[in-house]
Image 1 (cartoon, protein in one colour):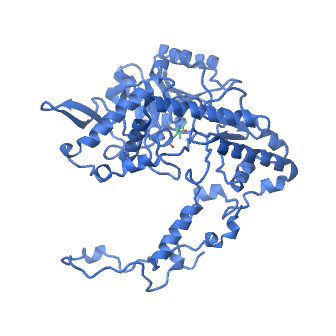
Image 2 (tube, rainbow, N blue to C red; image 1 turned 90 degrees about the vertical axis):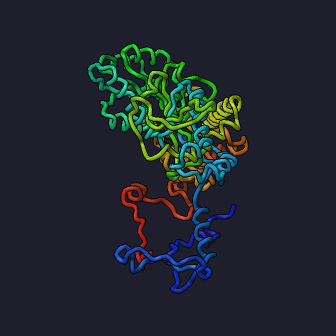
Image 3 (tube, rainbow, N blue to C red; image 1 turned 180 degrees about the vertical axis):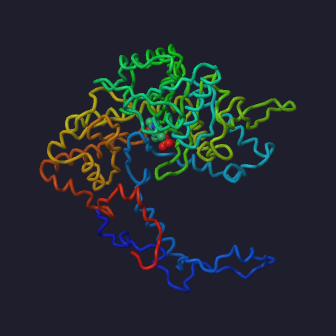
Length: 494
Ligand SMILES: *Cc1c(COP(=O)(O)O)cnc(C)c1O
């Protein structure tokens, strides 16, 4: 294997500004052949602006190298649990780049944007079918934003009934951190529900928390432990009996596509993450979309806008409307349109049987990893999993190596690390989500890497504890990088 060390150009850490040479140029403009325009007033102009003076090839090489330092789904396996880092077919990008869609101005009048509005309308219909919840708003631009919107829908629903305010929102202890954050932002008091020894929600504990103050519950199905919740019907029934609503965190639908109708199971409000399940590349904070799907009776509260079909002069016509009791807008315009186009193209290309196949293969791949790895790595819960498997590095920890070290060492083997230390209730958690798009050969190579690392933990634990050894930079101070990012260029500083 060629190590990064042997490719010195990849280690050149000089920023573009540091490569600047006065007078060097990347582009020469042709002589002006249009009328000269006056510049804005003096006070709006800057006298100096430090820009790098570099040649065109230097710019291209600089950014191409940077892109090569990035790990991506397009370079190798990316088993980051709960993030569904699947391969996204390029045809969906191509469709989203079609000039008529990509260049459509958000203020284009209705008659000029009928095709785009029809696409939104039909996507709403598809997602309503996928979830079994027919009221759909495509406005939210992330899972977390959709959660907040859904929580506000639940609040608006309770208020509309004119009862005493209900303030309690139940959330299992395995939940994604955004759930309690969204509920709190929405003005609710979060009450945790523990998981039982099988990783299921503790139904007895739930019964103890029911009552007239209950606004609802936020559940994730499959749970963030990658497990199906066998008591889901009973759980929904109990919450409904107390007058509460059931919110489903559907960020990870990869196990249930075409398999289960969440509306039939008893969910009232569900969000989907199109940038996980429905083919938008993500990571690094790229654009996302978190459509919100609700039961018929809650559609009037949905965030605006919602696409609607009306019968115009004999022909059908599409337009954006504000639902009657809408909780309001979440941003300008109508969500992340390009992400919505990708999801539409993905669903049209696969069709119902294709979506069902996605979830079957995703679950099969996760269970293959579970079966092959469970002798070396402890399982958080020893039972069949759904789209992801949660391992624990407890055994390795007893030999002096932590889950973090194993994750870092995987980088040397060319794999992205799994999600770590989440869910919080699993000690030394390594959460692995293979997705449906990986071949058996890739999964076998990943298994072989984890087996080899387990050997190293016994034979050379320091090698693992000091990994990674082949990346351009070694271990970073992650807390400082997140809290005090130093992103500004200053002259003379390297
Ligand atoms: C990713 C995820 C979210 C949050 O989605 P964002 O789009 O990142 O805001 C919420 N819940 C679960 C279970 C997730 O996996």
